[in-house]
Image 1: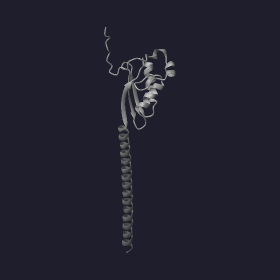
Image 2: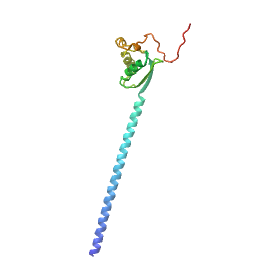
Image 3: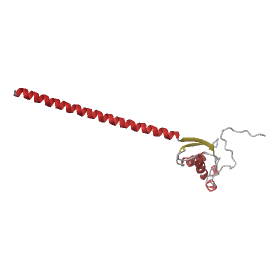
Length: 158
């Protein structure tokens, strides 16, 4: 009788030990599942934010008077200093700037004003005269200069 009771106690301890292992395993699997779902939710939220910010981006092009590579650097720096501007590229030959910006943070007129404050005329703003006077000699452009947005060279008519 003692032998059968020991055997029975041993089986009960084995079953209890196995039950603990099963419960522990299930808890680990559930924790991993919840963590995985939580991370997927974060990724989905980040993707939504990225799409929303892309939808707010606006591209504009407009004429800016200037002469050289130093002008390019100053004009682009002025445009990029405006909050919300993500890129600015001024074409020396076309006298045109292409700007991408977040229209929830700024607008095209603010970009015109920033460039004008650095001394350069744009289609909608006259350059600050004091800033113009402080530009290097090579950057002193003709105030009547055409802002040739097409890039076509016009032949002189004789």
